[in-house]
Image (tube, rainbow, N blue to C red; front, side):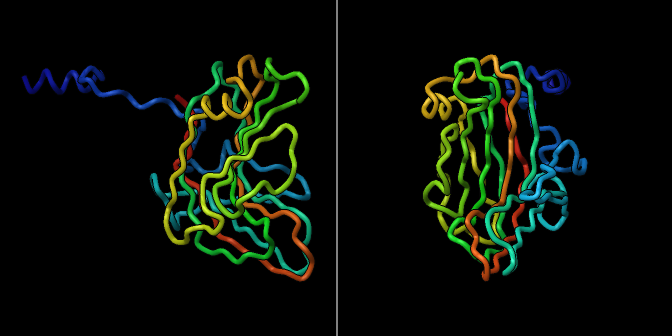
Length: 217
């Protein structure tokens, strides 16, 4: 009987639900940087891989948010993946960690952004978005006609520990946009630390980590 039980477990027939595949490739950053990327624009900065902190495995993504007295306006520090699944994914989850938080502007925050291009149900916009504010602000940082803001955490971040987030994307898009996207071209997923409307003469910094990022069923 013991050999039969082992055989059933090996085949996945023991009653346990197998883990669903992750649409975000290398979501725990154990294979390095790729296929994650950052935008090559003036207002964007990239990320690195570190073994200083991790939830799953040895590594995580590190965003060194920095601005000195000569910096002003807006800048995004982040990592991106683009996906083209046949069906719109249902679940988004992951962890973030903040180890330092020197606020230099009211609009200094962490967010995850889901951008859907070519949604058949929407004709007036090239894409539609949901911006999940993880921490840092308590109201929308700017007006965005094709975007919706959802607030998941406190205005001031919790320092020194991993914070988990999870969302039902079907429910959120249904509530915010009136439908679940279908027939779309692609999905862009962004995990960010950023600031907006920074004035000259102030400094800011934050050390932000992301790990165990998941999108799927």
